[in-house]
Structures are given as C-alpha cells and as structure tokens.
Amino acid sequence: MAVMTIGRAFSRLAQLAPDAVAVRCGDEVLTRAGLERHASALASRWVREGLEPDDVVAVALPNGVPFVVACVAAWKAGACVQPARPDRPVPGRPALVVGPSTSLEAEPGAPPPDLAAAHWKVSPTSGSTGEPRLVWAPAPARIDPERCVPEFMPPTGVQLVAGPLGHAAPFTYAMRGLMSGHELVLLPAFEPDAWLAAAESHAVTWALVTPSMMRAVLPALSSPPVPALPALERVVHLGARCPEPVKRAWLDWLGPERVWEVYAGTEAYGLTLVGGREWLEHPGTVGRGIAGTRLRIERADGTQAPTGEVGLVMMRRSDDMPWRTQGDLGRLDADGRLHLADRAADVVRLGDRDVHPADVEEVLEAHPRVRAAVVVGRDGVLTAVVQPIAPDAVALDGPDGLLAWCERLPLGLRPAAVVLTDEDLRDELGKARRSRWR
Image 1 (cartoon, rainbow, N blue to C red):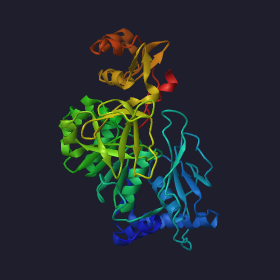
Image 2 (tube, rainbow, N blue to C red):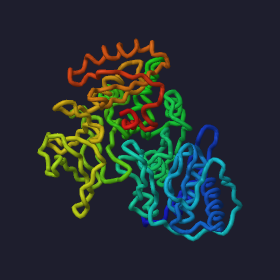
Image 3 (spheres, rainbow, N blue to C red):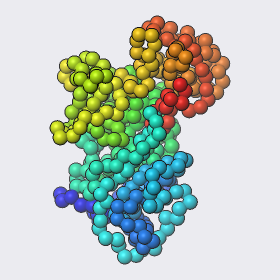
Image 4 (cartoon, helix red, strand yellow):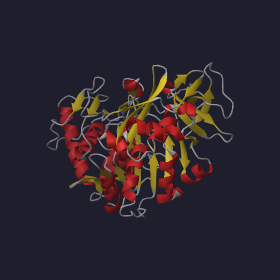
C-alpha cells in the first residue's frame, strides 16, 4: 500500500468500516466515522484560526476520547503532536495547547490541505534521571497503513490502554495501533480490578503494561481466581526492570507465548525484544536488537567490553549512525542477548564496590506490604526509602522489620537504614526519580 499522510490514513479507516469502534472510554464510544467527522471539523477550525503546517499542538488532556480527537485533528491540520500531562507544565513552546478547558467543538468546514508535518510527534522524556527534555521523532507524519506498527504489535485488534497518554510509550503504541485499525479501550487511570474487567469484557487482544502494573495485578488474580483472558493474544511490558518473581507469575498465568518484553526509550536509539519462552531459557534477558538495532557494551574508558562484562549499553540502528546510550548498564551474553543491571547514574559506590539499587529494590518490593522502594546512597551508607501499601507503618513492623527482611540479601547489599514515606516513589510507568531521595 502507498505511503500516505496520517490524516488520510484515518479517513481511509472511516471509509473501510465507518461503524467500527475507534475508541471507547467508560460509557463514551466513538466510531471511526465519528472520529473522522469530529477531528476533520476541529482541524478545519484550527487552520482557520491560524494553525500552520509543522506547528506543534500539545495535547495536555487526561486519558479519554477527547485526547484522541485532538491528536487526530492536529495530524489532519498538518501539525506535529506533543503528548503532555494535564497536571504538569507543558515543556517547549507549542503553537497550541489543548487543555481541560479547551473547547473541541467545531462546525464542519472546508477540509484542510492533506499535509504531513516533518515530525509526527515530539515527546517529553520521563525525567527519571533529570529534567524532562523534548525528543523529536525522525519520521514525518506519513505512514503505510498496513505497515505502520512495530513488529511485536498486530496490525488489528482491541488494545487496552491503561498508562497515561501524556507519556511517550503509551501514546506511541496507542496511536500507532489506532492508525492501522486498532480499537482503543482507554482507562482513565490504571487500577488492577478495572484493568482485568476491561480486558475480559471488551475481549482485549493486545496490551502494554509496566512492571509496576504487573505487580499490582497479581493479588487480584487469586481471589477469586481470574481466568487467563482467552482473547488476549499478547501483553508487552517495558518501562523498567521487571522483578523475576513478577515476570514468572505472569508467565504462569498467561503462558510464555503471550508475555513479551521490550527495552526501548523515548529517544528511539534502538530497541530489543524477547518472548516469554526465550526468557525462561535465559532468565533476566531483555532480548536481542530488532528493527536494525545493534548493541555494544562500553567500559568507562570508551573501549568495547567483552561478552559478559557489565558496562554502558550503547545502541544504534545502522552503521552510519553514532552509538548512543539511554544511560543504562548491562551485559551481552554469547548470543547477543542484553541483560540489564541498572541506571548508570543510580549506581552507589560503597567502599571499593558498586551496588546496583535495582537488586535491592527487587527484594524489598517482594515484601507483601511494600508498594514501592527506592534505594540510594546517603552519607556513605545504603538507605532504602519505602512506600508501604498501608499508610500505617505498623503494617510493616516498622523499619526494623524491613531491615530483617533484607537479611536475605548478601551482606554488602543490605541497607543500613530504612525511611518510610507515603509519597509515590514511582510514576505511572514504574520509573523512580532516585535523585529526589539522595
């Protein structure tokens, strides 16, 4: 099929199946024809009001049908879409900010010219290692509607979206799916019971999750027992290192053929992919490079590390591109599979050894009453900041109880102190900003 603008791709979908559901959120449902009609009218209004090709439209709305309408309207107007969070300042200088108070009503008008922005999106990074920055997608707002999705996503189906669309990953996979014919089932926010109910009632076939979502779902699976969602063909998780017990629990529940993992970043330097069966044969791996991705591990002096040695993970998609890093440490096995260790910036130096906080956090978060944990170096010792599931510290037997729990760790990895907090330690994608607690 010929490459076309994203705006025209949505028009094509509306012509092929006008009554098919494009997006639903709660009781609000919009068909493909309804999406085409509403987005086209809004695009015409914005062009009349002065929106120009290649302008940036920041969509700072909560998950819902209006978010999708605004994005499609921006593409139809020849603009670049910037997903944004409604509860945070919008970075950059977009030509238009669509917020909760912005009217999306518009009367039908002359259709805007069929234009494609030079960049189909510009996304803020998560800010887990510093202030968020904007990353421009290198691809223009043009697609082949039959080949516009990543290889690990089916071209059609029902996609459950529980992560905030203001984040790069949920936005990217939801919109790429929508462009090729997915029906989107949006949740206003992630909640385990609501996720399970939506997956079952809407016969969801594909879903993107994070390790923190996966961990939160586990208690809901046993009382009463939850069936293995027969319509669900695949879940893909990304966003942070997944604790091995959590991963194994999902593999047991859904089966290894349906649980996949992607390692990628907003910067799109490269990505890796691993299926559940391969992971069981090589526990801990995030897979091998796909879509042309090449991997290299570098030592601190910039030289290439040998197989099995931990160093800085470097990626590139072709030989004419520079090696880039997302700031993660890892190693390659003999078959080129990547195994992640931690963020380089988060490594704690204690005496003559390096401690990877993720190793300690994984043990702490295995405690049944811990919601999240962040481990940092403070005054030369390892300190664990813990958010309990219950607001009452007694539920954890206090810091002493958690220190006793950590005795299952090797001596050099045990925290010297535990601090309890009721603050959220991880965002909706499971990322932690450890610098906040250093």
